[in-house]
Length: 359
Image 1 (cartoon, rainbow, N blue to C red):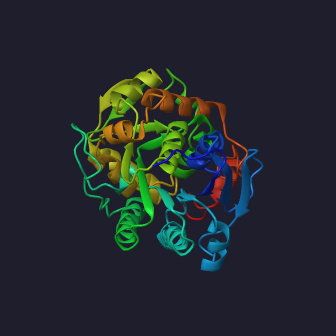
Image 2 (image 1 turned 180 degrees about the vertical axis):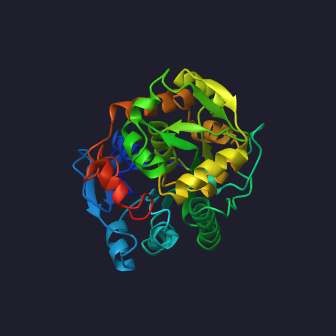
Image 3 (image 1 turned 90 degrees about the vertical axis):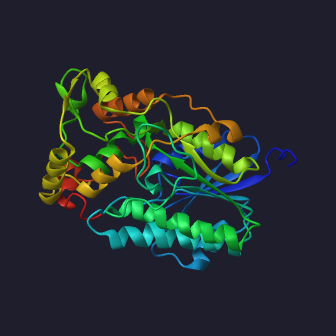
């Protein structure tokens, strides 16, 4: 494939203002081959970039014509948009995450967009090993108990059909581990932990112990490194799936080092029971089924991204997670609706949503 001339590629990023989207926009906007970036978001942000134009669109309510109007003329569409909440109403998340994504994929085909880059997840993988890494050929049927892996797995099947029926469309799937950065700290607290976590507790030396739960081993990656991988996937002649994660995998020992705490063995059943009780009491927005997912996801082999994309993460997993923890303590965020440091009404406002009950 010939080298892409400078300033000729038009990219649409669907979900441009969240944890992944802001980093993807930054990476694309810095590439001289990119002429323009259209960022699609439900709500207009105060954050911007010189090469970025925002188009507001709610995928759950948009028509095919609405989406076609935004995607027409694009060379690359990057689909990142995802609604994590309300976890207590999976029909609502399905409408945005699955039906909305399918609307985007259909528009890519109708508008003749040459390249689609989609952000899947490690959660799309079927349960797998923690003691050795699996490649991109590991089954992607997710864990059926929670909405997030179900939705990610379903869209993997949708893309299988798209690739079969439209081989002219270059489809790339990136499957990152847990994505962290300083600016996402308050958003991720709201999404997964809820309003009742005192951020002072995440200071090193304050929490005396970290639970050592069997199966608690996962991979992390910095949002900026995912943004760079998406840039490479968008502008390189590659196809297929790419696992994205930094070294080393995160386990209780590493968490203990970051928090200056010792580890104490806790049975998985006891830990799950505590999460389940907190969920039923509406103290946390993340369900016990999502906890089950974390304990079952495999450790991924990232060698394909490194060899075929030329991708190398700049941050270690400890660096990414440490930056996130610092952001929690500092109440960090960014000038976009998803990443805002504080929602209207503050933490009482969060609690008023039912903690996972409403977006």
